[in-house]
Image (cartoon, rainbow, N blue to C red; front, side, top):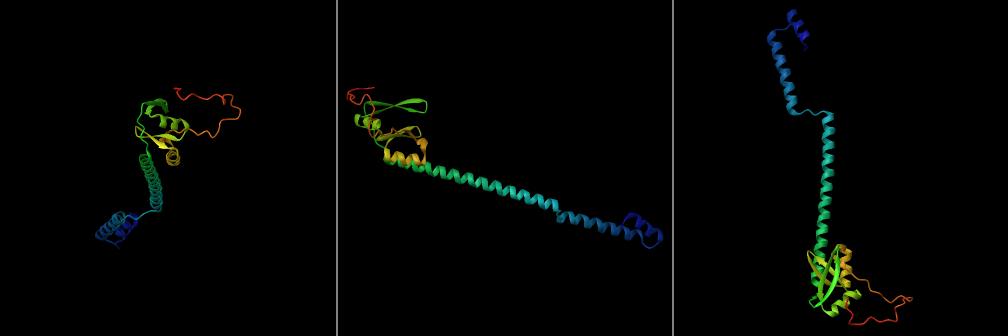
Length: 177
């Protein structure tokens, strides 16, 4: 009931102040209960749905990132295992120089391994801060999985070019660079 109607009824003698007070009290209780029960408006349902969709999109993105990280770790573990299982021991007295990024590094190897490195039969791989020598077939497998693990892989020359002017001159075996 509106105030003006309640006042008119009181003046006409059709209602009393006690009933008016009870009606107002009931109306107030209904409004409070409606607020507590959370009568949801259309705007709040749309907002809630948008929030839920945004959360689902964020969860998908996080799951994709986690999956990619797991795959990356699995590849790194495979490469580590492949390199460690196929590593060739290379202790020797002959220095072999190679570049690792912008740094020039040196490994001391024996003469046989030195020749194989030069000819491209052996490659150099890096795990952490250590260098490993691996056969070229293994290096190809590592390149497919993790290219940055291979530091040096010389290409094998099948034959000398036909128009090579120095083809008749042999390189002496005792020549050291």
